[in-house]
Length: 329
Ligand SMILES: [Mn+2]
Image 1 (cartoon, protein in one colour):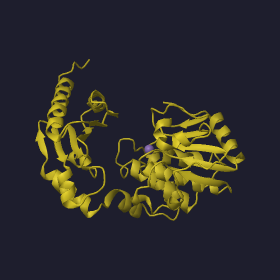
Image 2: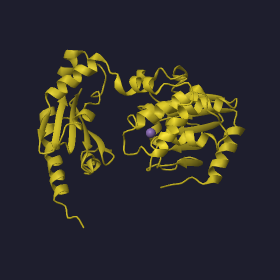
Image 3: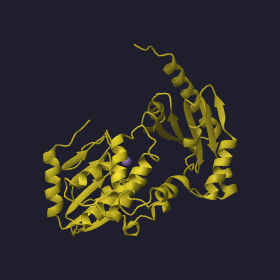
């Protein structure tokens, strides 16, 4: 684990307090931690009177539009910004289309991913924390920034979403202490939970119905598919699978879950989840994809659902068999 030196934090404090116009950026396909951390840092820096511009490479998902400042987020980096701060981004590529807009290197990188490449002048990375929002909350005092209702709402949203409501293995006693600290402000944990983790559209619910209706289960391997025809039938227009794969992991006996999502132009997108310790990123990489040990994805091109399923399921079964029969020292 990388532990930022106190001197690095001190330097970051001096840089931030000395800047005039700070641009805070986050990663592509922003999740709650990216949006919450970008906006939480934005409002925290405003407490010391800074001009701050929040920026993300993609549209902010509608479920985060309740966060104060979400309407200010642009896909640009202002030319007169004299300080760039990246949050929740493990490497420069994660900034997506913003990379081409950078006129200078990133000054400060604040993150919790163990894989963080240390791409900035000052790198503050704590991989023990469950969310960048958790780490940012811890950093506010040493950075001599303060919390207000807006900061708390944004950071608590990052914390709640990255821990899926405090139920990931990354959730520590310290995580709950941080949440406790943020809840001293005018924020509603219930409201944040409802808006970001619980509610879904009618169409997404029907997509679940389709996908769960077609689920197959075979010796710890669980899978289903989302078809273009099915999506059209129920009027589901979003790109993904409405997180069907997480539902599959709830099925008793699941060791590895997969969802096959049919896309336009003969593309099939595959998501894996592993509950048994198998490294599914390894399988995803063999199809040109990637990810983490327990959650990975890949896209197959020039194929169809049947062909993709047969080759991907076969390779996944092989990997599961190898993993089960591995020599344990
Ligand atoms: Mn995160």
